[in-house]
Image (cartoon, rainbow, N blue to C red):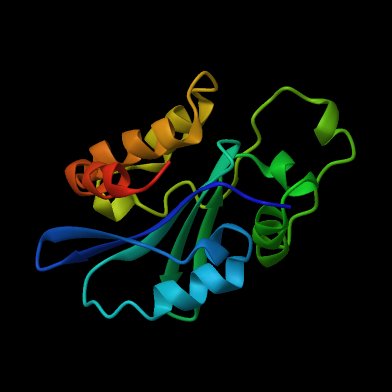
Length: 160
């Protein structure tokens, strides 16, 4: 299955934000995203933003001894390996009736960017904006944390 979208590494070094493109494999394979993010050398914050097929997003943040994760809609795990990988790492099962629900069901750490200016409550509000596409939600996250110009510049350079 071909997966579209984008995978971006976000790094904050010496008070400045930098966004770089991750390998496309990160959209299908959570381990690939984690490995690539761990390879980013920074004394500041490092995390990844994955927009998968305009269906859902994942925030991946390596932390000492593991990784902090947020999946915007766990129901995506029924159709996407990367979403299933997130739930596996979180040790969360998909409820039996999940596919029949129209509700958005986020899973993971809503507060994983709280130290960067986005508390869990605001992350929940962004995820609950079901009329927005994942790229629009990620844009809101970027705006709130302060790296929107860098993210916009990188995405404008992308083909398609």
